[in-house]
Length: 247
Image 1 (tube, rainbow, N blue to C red):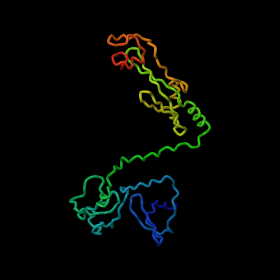
Image 2: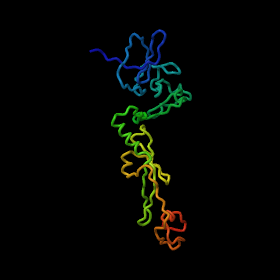
Image 3: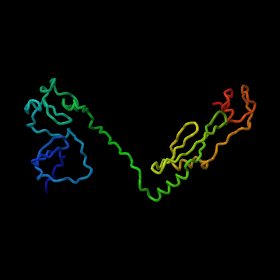
Image 4: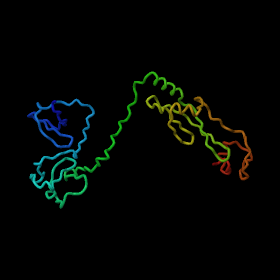
């Protein structure tokens, strides 16, 4: 059975056709281009994991260039560069406690520790609008467009058995807003996003329905301090002396 080759990332290609390659651990090696072949595997994870690195025994310090004193040799958890504790500026008296250590160069570039057991969740790409809808989707779009400017009434419970009606208009936002086709804007300033099914549950009135205006007194006021013996509900709502309707 043939040996399985390593999968490495190409970092640079020199004029002599020598290629600088990087492994997932962050370490780099060089090889000639004729010894390489492309990798066709999909969904490769390109995350650099310095904790996977296995340093060679002759790995030299980046400052003094000596590989001795491996007991006090530190490897940067970002770039993988080796440093003796006594070669750092300022020097360290011992190997620092903790899982992550970053060399002065990486620290100066703002690299901070990220726990490996809690990887950052990848950001979800925004959902692209469907520019080529199916016939069924197109039919739903047309049905929603037919509901544009329909009138919706919500009821607010007041004291006792009294209800206050607040009217609103459903505005069609376009096909690309599917399935949240509508913004319902109420007279009290509230704006609610709604689907076609949700709009139908509100029993909307046809487009162009006019809000009724009460001008004839229809109810006797039971509040003794009110200055209007009889008045319509709309008048009572704006009567500052009536505590029954002015809520």
